Image 1 (tube, rainbow, N blue to C red):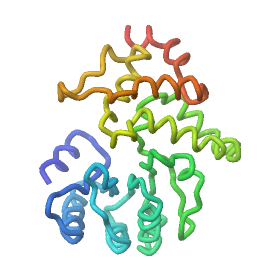
Image 2: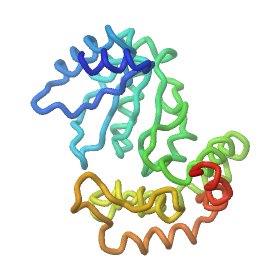
Image 3: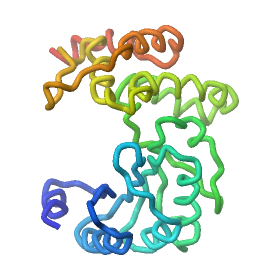
Image 4: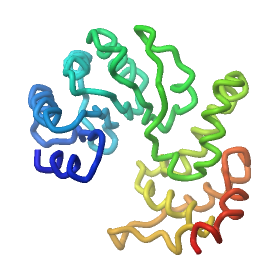
Amino acid sequence: MQEAELAAGLGYDAVLLSPVVPGASEADLLERARAVGEVLPVVGFYLQTAIGGPVLSRRFWSELAEQPSTVAVKIAAFDRYRTLDVAHGVAASGRADQVVLYTGNDDHIIGDLLADLPGGLRFSGGLLGQWAVWTRAAVDMVAGLAKDPELWAGRAAALTDANAAVFDAANGFAGCITGVHEVLRRQRLLEGIWCLDPDEGLSPGQAEELTRVSGAYPWLTDDAFVSGHLDDWLG
């Protein structure tokens, strides 16, 4: 509640609630959402189990969506079945037209954005770590999905391949933060890839994978755009 009140005082419009609360039941998570919802609108969050997220039922998502303060859900389960559980739950809530779905499934970005979900639902956009890099290309991709979905559907696997390099899927996502930093460092937007944990770095072979995907999928990068604006941005 203190964090929600601070966010409200700073002018935030909504808050995303982490599902990682040690020892919390689904009922506990729903009660927390109700309490926070008295301060600010709530965005639900399904986080993948590989980095600590809990498994949550369709009933949970239905009851969360039933709460008037719930305005959106970010689905980052990295699991097709659990992604559908959220859609089924929201569709059954009676508030499907008032709860926006965002994909956080970096392993299935284009597939999610093109998908017809249960109950006639669709993803309205994404809250994605992948979009921390090559962001201009991501803007072009989202615009292109509406104009030429067949072209972009054919690129779905390539984007997943690139995300695997950035987020270090081969090593259980150990290099996910440094992978983002390395892309930005190569574009001269960051001076280095340092993290709060001084021992956190790229995994063996991750730099080579980043080089590979950058060369294999030039439509995915925005190096020329960034280079053309660096002087203006960095002064």
